[in-house]
Length: 96
Image 1 (cartoon, rainbow, N blue to C red):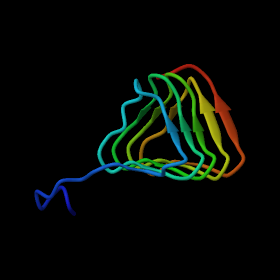
Image 2 (cartoon, one colour; image 1 turned 60 degrees about the vertical axis):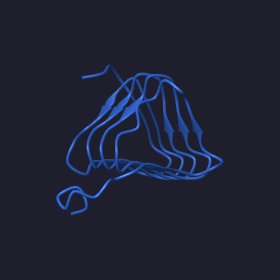
Image 3 (cartoon, rainbow, N blue to C red; image 1 turned 120 degrees about the horizontal axis):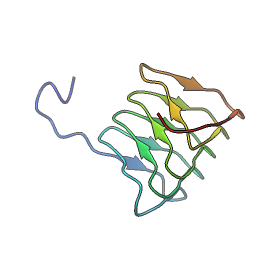
Image 4 (tube, rainbow, N blue to C red; image 1 turned 30 degrees about the vertical axis):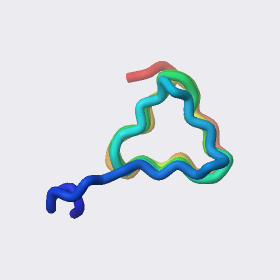
C-alpha cells in the first residue's frame, strides 16, 4: 500500500540485532532483537527476521518471507510468497 502510494518504505533493525555491512536489506525488512544477518545475505522486500533468527552468509530470503523466533538458515533460498521458516527450525542448502 505504501509503495503504491509513492511513500518511502524503510528498514527497521532492532538495536541489539547484528547486521553485516555487506548484507543487502531491501525496503520493508524488519529485523527483531538479537537477530543476525551475516555477510552477503540478502533479505528481499518485506522480509521479517524474528528475535534470535539467523540469516547466514549468502542466504536469500525471498519477498515477504519470514524467519520465526530462533530459526536459522544458511546458504539457501527461503521460497517467495510468504514462506515461513518456523521457530527453532534450521535450513541449509545451496542458493537458488
